[in-house]
Length: 252
Length: 252
DNA sequence: ACCGCCTGCTTGTATAGACAAGTGAGGCCA
DNA sequence: TGGCCTCACTTGTCTATACAAGCAGGCGGT
Image (cartoon, rainbow over the protein chains, first blue to last red):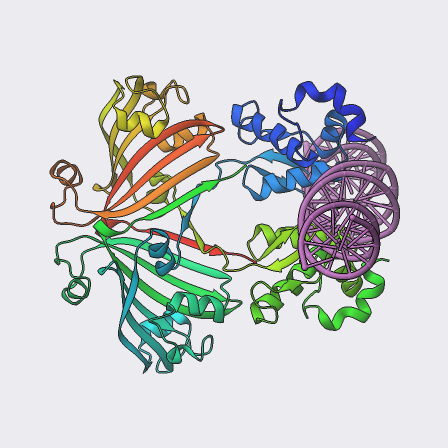
């Protein structure tokens, strides 16, 4: 049984523009279309791989790939032995672009400059040590940098770094490379955690960002790991009227 | 050639705890470990499927699945005819949990209540029509709802809805079901766009949220699509001291 | 009536073989 | 020398087959 032999008879049920799409994509479209239209409500059972194999005329491995990908995209849930089902309440997570501030600025066609207010080793307090999973009192790197877009401050970067993950951190020239860029290269990140808040800046922050203490700020707290080593904990503070986070998420 | 026959000779190169992991996962670990350690710098060529097949003793389809998944996770890039390479600058997107506010509140063990300030059909202005991809002047649904957590306002939800995607929107009882919940069921979302900002609330917003106009607020703008139909455009405004977005992202 | 086993169906994984399509380098020819 | 062609190698896909593992309902025994 080859897909091509029976696709002629089964074409009515497939998408109209199955022109040159690979077979597994046609199967994905076939399923997704029905889920989106509501033909199969949440929790409903989806035809088994063998049924789809017979119905659509593709091999089981092809159908399997389609169902597996739709599952990893959150549309379906599968349990071995029981079957495949339309997922209840799709996870509504959203992807945000959290990027290197310097790249962002340059992509807007503007000039990026940064000023280093602090770059040193410290003995860690309990807070920072806790965030990085280190012993309190162990050595920790600390930097405080302000990033400017065409001369206007757009980010205050208050960052702690695990020396074990980036031993050379203190020797970098952070006017030509951002800590972000350096850390990504030094310790490719495999995990990240973010918390986003709106805050009122304290006096010191307001001064460094050249804003009034009444201006709202966007605070992005970021922790990262490489493998199972914690890498960094950063507080990134942006003036509310000069910065926004953007993200687009698509699953199909 | 079966994986089991040659895995004995090749085990030294595989992870120590390949205990009961499926073969494709072992291959993924093998590659990822080297990428994380920096053995293969960014842009470096990764062994071809055939080489890995010979080296690791698994079939090409198994190796192919591993490489395909690592590619979709952003660790590798592949180009047909040329080869597989360690991805330059992994996309640093972060996943945020953007969820139903009512669920969030209830999960914290608190009480959710909402007050409906507006729920009606309007003729769309150019802004809303543009966001939803409709003709200016066409009919559009508009709701304004405040959500309370244990009696304190935590979100002002200003929402426009495409009537074509959710014709029954105006007939819902939004005290017992949130617009979010209803829309997710009525039109399963396949695409979403978010913009996050810190803002100062206008007088009306401050009044509805029972905060002073000086308090910073987190503004989340959200647009969604179902298939190729635009569904909704919402401005979700949260008092800065009562709300935060959280997200964890892991790729391995 | 209830418990336990068995059996058929389901998903999950692994393999070998095949062909399509794109890339890039090296060689040939003008 | 420069342009074109060929060919080896790569990824991308598809299929048929096989076995493992988990679930659920039916059947029989107690």
